[in-house]
Image 1 (cartoon, rainbow, N blue to C red):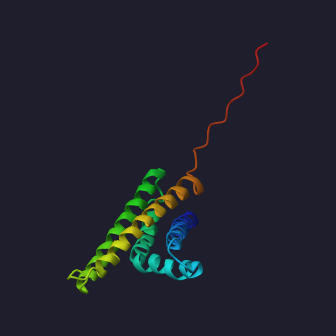
Image 2: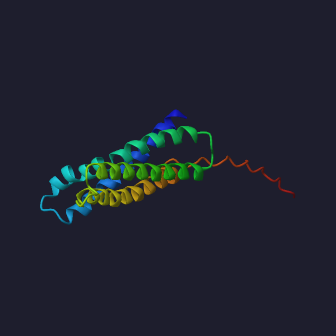
Image 3: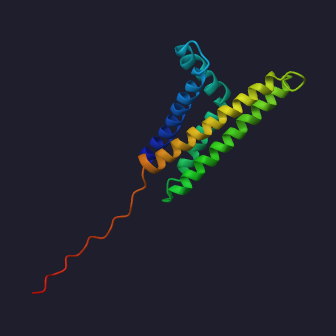
Length: 160
């Protein structure tokens, strides 16, 4: 049971980060002259800099959700738990960035602070899509729920 929980958490977070990294990198490459610098430097800055709070919080929430849902057999509850926790983590991330931006003067005539929040919202939308794909992949394809064993068919004697 512990092995499944660890595998579930690692796969969900790993696939989400990989998908988000690839898509953010592809989007950044459309406006970049240095592909290596974009994929190795700029993409991680957006992913872990602007979305670091959401990724960290969502990792903790996925661990808690996987532990609490370990006895439930319905895969729908696990999917819903992980996706709602992702939405909550993204909301907290955007809220914290907005508060920091406004507190540092980003809302008083300078639009740079709110631009950072807008970029984080767009990247958060991408993280939501990547997280949804990862949760569905892991819960429905990789770690499929076990089907109950079907009763063995009893042979019917031939009547001659």
